[in-house]
Length: 209
Image 1 (cartoon, rainbow, N blue to C red):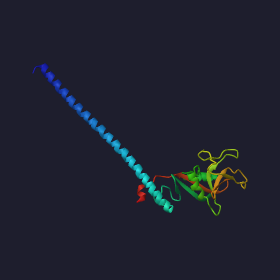
Image 2: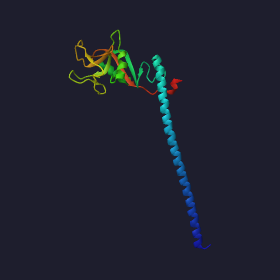
Image 3: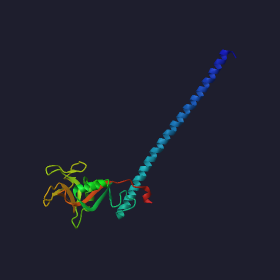
Image 4: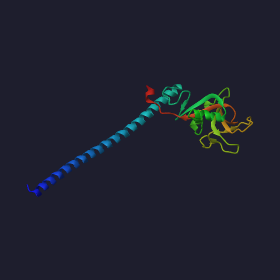
């Protein structure tokens, strides 16, 4: 072949090889993109399935828990009561209001907050005691002219329950206890029992076996 013809043939070969290689890369990229989409779809389906399984597990565990008041599937620690999405502990030890606040913090929890009708209906029956053992809540005020606030700063709603001023307390009466289904303002330094709450963990599927 003449040099010019040879040059053209070589150029044609390189062009074809280049196209073949490019096609191969394009095909691989397309297959990779398809696989990536399939993987994302499977991951989405897996998450949805896991969420469904978790809801079923929680419902079943709650049914088992409600029958006896306890079950190993409970997402709450020992000695804590499970209600809604929270765990509650009503302790027998007596402390000042601030002492109970520190106690709850040490338990990775906060003091009892009654801000919904559902929690009110759960918490108040816990306060019934023939020996008049009342529980500190997380409700307090900074002086008689100040607003009642929960420990997280949210205001008290008088529509939920009334605070009865306990005039037998000779000092501040700036902290609230619950006793026999009622709320009383007491001197924060008085010794009362502690009531704490914390968010419940997820129900473990293996605990239902």
